[in-house]
View (tube, rainbow over the protein chains, first blue to last red):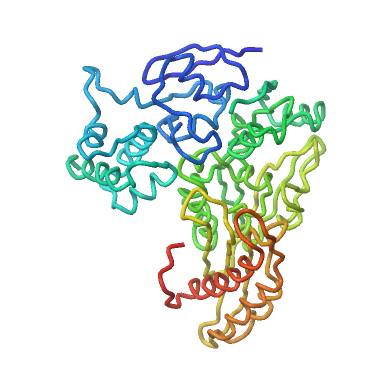
Length: 157
Length: 295
């Protein structure tokens, strides 16, 4: 039997009908058309389905939509400015060539946002520690770490 | 991987949970963080007809300090352990081990109760809790009962939890004054991996006589459950602190564990690594200089 839930997704209130077994990832992608969060490993090892739940990073493919009723969800789509401009972290990823195939990028950028919101000037070690649950098969991570570092340097304290 | 359909039950109190457990028995599973349960359901290793959602139950959350003990609600997430100001002195060992679990995302979902009830021999919270002399409070319609964590963990994926019970909280007595401690985890890589071997150590020393007083050692991933290395503990307790003694105790620990060969490592390798890591962990807890290792 479907259940009604309420989620605030990227600042917009949504009333949704979901099956108990529906994962948050599938609800975001299929019901709301937000395809930024990706389905990777399905068992919580790759981080490509990362979204922010009430501001904190979680894996949307390991989360039942019914279990997060009433929460606030931020996906990569929610980082765009109201005028459609890219978020400074997104700009920095582009500038540093931190995006190749793009599959890990939404998760990486949300982890970067979560880190920089709490700790505006992290060390390289803290950056690497924070993205340790996000796998990238293309870049070798160097450009990703540089991109995050650059945002932390240019941001005013 | 999608999940097979199930009924989702949203109890509003612990009493409701207990009644649902009595009514549905092993047809129902309790949902906490879901990081183990949902994977098992995706892989069709278990297919519960019903999930009982524990997440909204505030009585299972939070860390409470009493005069001589700490009570940690079963739904306390790993990230809450990392951040809690209550986890100071010897209790900080648990926070240290929590930082070694999976990834930040997993630590925002996974809970201490889930980690223990999943009862993996490699559960990262178990070795620190064993050396901290943790007991678990199990709760049902019949009331509460407390048993030592060591008795609760009975085998791989097996616990002393009855079908009508939930793990309500973890209780930690006050650690000895001046506790020195560390937790070492060896994986195939630094993150997102289960331990091949993990070691928790908590010691107290007599600085004048240069002897060990209390010595507590626990090992993960090298027996059907996380275990205390009691023979090695005995060998050090009360004796002079020295490199040779530590090395010998580490060898004893390697002999008393019962590792097995699996996809991750052979039994022989694990045994050898127990020797290395116990020596390193005891030395590190005492502040001996040890080479940087990255684990």
